[in-house]
Image (cartoon, rainbow, N blue to C red):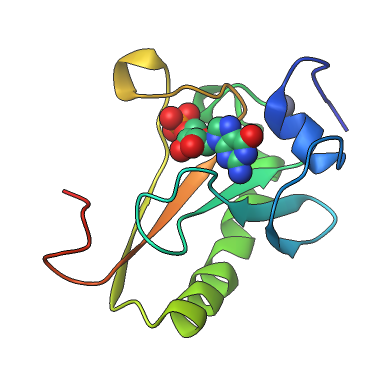
Length: 116
Ligand code: 5GP
Ligand code: ZN
């Protein structure tokens, strides 16, 4: 497992800093974003450290994408959301602030949910 000493998401994987985990398997962790853009805003990450999608090995990508439908359905059930945006930012120009690949799962509730 490739990890980076100064990476905050590697620390979350290793339980060195606390997070509210909603899913975990051998290769993947999902946890609530510390800044909830909408209720239930969740990040899905591989345990393997990769900077972003450009550097994501194919086998790691398979593990992450394989886990996403079940996580999305669980969030949908728990929150009562009526839809979801799923996205990943790569590099600063696109809004990336944490350089460990992650997918945002953003539950949507309607016009007033605050996310454009
Ligand atoms: P990015 O801007 O890189 O696409 O998304 C990084 C996300 O990580 C942000 O939405 C930010 O709120 C979240 N985040 C940053 N630090 C932490 C942390 O320590 N814990 C959790 N749960 N989320 C974090
Ligand atoms: Zn990392």
